[in-house]
Length: 375
Image 1 (cartoon, rainbow, N blue to C red):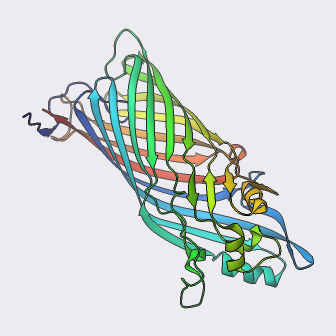
Image 2 (image 1 turned 90 degrees about the horizontal axis):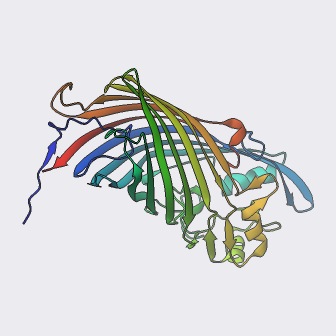
């Protein structure tokens, strides 16, 4: 029977850190991250909110403008293991500590305002576990920058399965109400969609040493597909013309099969070693585009309304820029204290013109990582 001991990396002489894609064989990297982000919903024109939507109530048509603001605080645990020098296993567990959503609207009709208060409360909040990621990264060709070698590049491939552990929207039940008679369905804020995500990715780096300092160009692309699944539909009077009874709307929709649109992601990041083996600074940009979602229910009009309507589309685009600083304390010959660790501080902000039909977030994070080895 083989017994393995897990010890801090007191004797590892190679500098490897969160600034690199992979870690050596039998090495564990444990990372804890605190992330805070704040964002507005961005419409078809890049402005805040879903604007200028016409809704007919009785014989009158009213224009409804809606705005959403999300404020999310997340703590994440990332565990990575070097299966071999060419492959790493990863698991990421996000914990939503606080998720607040503010929903406001503007309409010239008092009747519309009353309905909005019922169906769409202004303030919602929740917390809980997020979707958990299991993944595998494999070095295809080249040499990682932490290892060095003749080839000053590396090419990786990877596969992630993102499992739906996050709370989806709760099912509408007209008998499940609060003290004011409002169904809890209207007050519920979901964390996840309830779908399994499958992500195939390719990524790599080009690097050189200039005047003793490492300079990297890191790039990444991925495509994500989602499993179809039955979901609980959001009950809203806006989605079914001529009907304002929640029970009638729920009956007209029935069961819903949800098919989320595929997603294509890309990023490029430049990284420079400011202080050899001590400090890296990175700047970059990423983007994501998606296909349209599909819904299959008893109501064809509702299905089409959910996919695309005036000034709203489930075909979305998101882009952001980032800057981060990595402070390293992992070199066994030049380290403070007995425990190797790395501290990362970063900020990310959305690109206004390129972010549509999605939330445009501004976020900041701090991450600390440490390394252990199985002997």
